Image (tube, protein in one colour):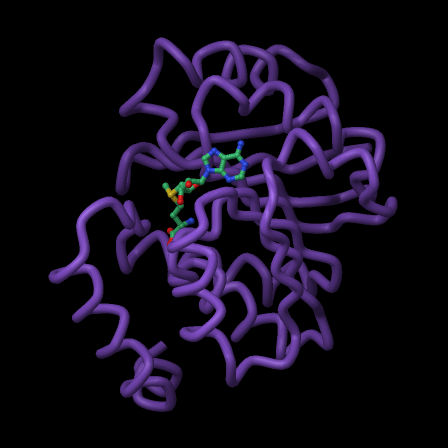
Length: 186
Ligand SMILES: C[S@@+](CC[C@H](N)C(=O)[O-])C[C@H]1O[C@@H](n2cnc3c(N)ncnc32)[C@H](O)[C@@H]1O
């Protein structure tokens, strides 16, 4: 990971500055970001969907990994200023498609074969995001969701669904706001 951090040190420094200067970016922490990077590599994910771009910090890590898997990241953000900021931050990465929309309005138009899904947007929507995309998940897809421990009142339905469904094997990692990692058996 040190090699990767060195390679992207300028971009990572920029993200660090933005996090310090701008409120309401809600970026995942460094450990979670690096874990996403490793999961994309290990899964050799090619069709990656992220719900909740913010300024593009997690998108950056997903797409950097996807450069090594010939993959592409489709990322959705509803907020105007965070969408624009992400556009600037991610300009050097050719494998990102940004959507400026409410996730619930566009998920139905996504194609099948998603092999990596990262959910990090409006908490009450988690279960609906998943339901909209579930029949588009590829076998052996990885589904990661943040804020599982920090917002149990809203993400609880999602967590219960994943944990009780025979289609998934999952764990909650006690980092950031509680990161759930699920393996979709298909
Ligand atoms: C926790 S932040 C995402 C942080 C980002 N994943 C990162 O780690 O850098 C959540 C983002 O989701 C966006 N969001 C909330 N509800 C949304 C929705 N229904 N559709 C699309 N984006 C949404 C918010 O505007 C916010 O920027």
